[in-house]
Each structure stands twice: as structure tokens, then as C-alpha cells.
Image (cartoon, rainbow, N blue to C red; front, side, top):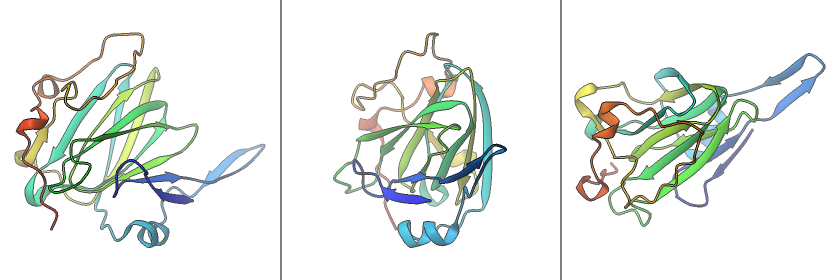
Length: 185
């Protein structure tokens, strides 16, 4: 397992999972607390989430505010997505900047996203199963959505051969200029 800091934005980590394969398939360790803590610090993961979506589904850009903020360890177990995070940390030199990664089941790569980031993804394959760990319980009253299409973000969403499928909530996200930066404690 390789855990390296993302060069674009401090605090985000790229994770490559080593696979041992033979004629039967492969074996991989997809989570090692000791290695993750040595590289990125301690996270107290308390919940695992999963979603299944079809091509063109765009989920995001979601974040939790206040005491309910969440760090996420994300991966794809079927299909492929374009995963995007936006830095919303107060005082960060990369505030408002985004990072994009293609996460795929075939590659097995993961992304560690600390608290203080908006997160979303676009399904690139016919179907994608997305799994993630969070370090804080979901609290509907603290959920917020950053508008995925805000020109100030400069996110280039690729053409996936069909119109995007976006929830009404995600279509009504706030603009970056209206987001209160996340205070790191």
C-alpha cells in the first residue's frame, strides 16, 4: 500500500493499493490503520457508506459544517468515477482550488479527504459502486452543498455521452463566494 500526499492540495492523500494476483484473481489489503496513521495522522473511522449510480450521475459537491464535518476515505468497488474535492479550509493557501482523480475498481486506488473539503463525483462507467469511510456521523441539519458548476471553481467535468443526472439539492448548491470557510480545530 502506497500513501502519498496529493501534490496539488496539502492534506489530501492518494492511496494505491497493492494487489497480489494469480490465475484465481487477486488479493489486496484495502485498509491498514497503522500505515494510514503513519502517513496522514489519526482518523477515527466510525461509519462506512456505499452508493450505486449509473453513468452520468453527478453527486456533490457535499460537505458537513461545524462539529459535524467529516473526513472521508473514498474508493470505487465497481466501475469508475471522476472524484473531485474542493478546499474550503479557512486560511488555506489553496482555498477554493479543486483536485480531480479518476477512481476505479480495476485500479483499486483511493483518496483520503480530510475535514474542510467539499466532495463529489461523476460516474464515468455504465455503473459505479462507491464506498467510503467517514469519521463523523451524518447530520442532515449540518449538510451543505457547493454548486458543482460554479465557474469560480473551474472544474472541468468530462462529457460522459449522456446528460448529467443531478439531484435538485445539488442543482441548488451555494456559490464559492458565499461559503463560510471551515475553521480547523
